[in-house]
Image (cartoon, rainbow, N blue to C red; front, side, top):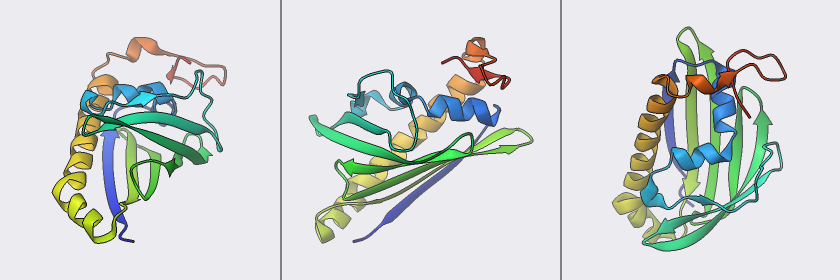
Length: 171
């Protein structure tokens, strides 16, 4: 099985807690995913993120809905979390989200390790389509994240939460 890796880093002028709290909310994944993917969360809300949380959603491949189920395997606020696919279009999918403070805010890292089904045919499909699609999706995400979180558009949603962490997103 050929395992591919997609890794992206993005520096955002926000506190690590702010970034973590934004990404731990599954509804925000819908906001940062291109409409063309047809991403829709099926898990009943509210969704409490923690190790063991299972998320069900659909995406569209060639116009057809495909069910995708992920499991949160690691949950370590505000450092990061990981999910693995239990069901979906990939033979293997492991996505790690990490958040590291720096002098300018937070460096967010996405690392996705994935494999396709169908052996040699899967490798051809990866070269012709999947790699480009994932690049488009993550490029889109980077633009939207920057627009949403650095433009100040969401600054009015910031407040202290019950842990008295400054600048946390309202729940």
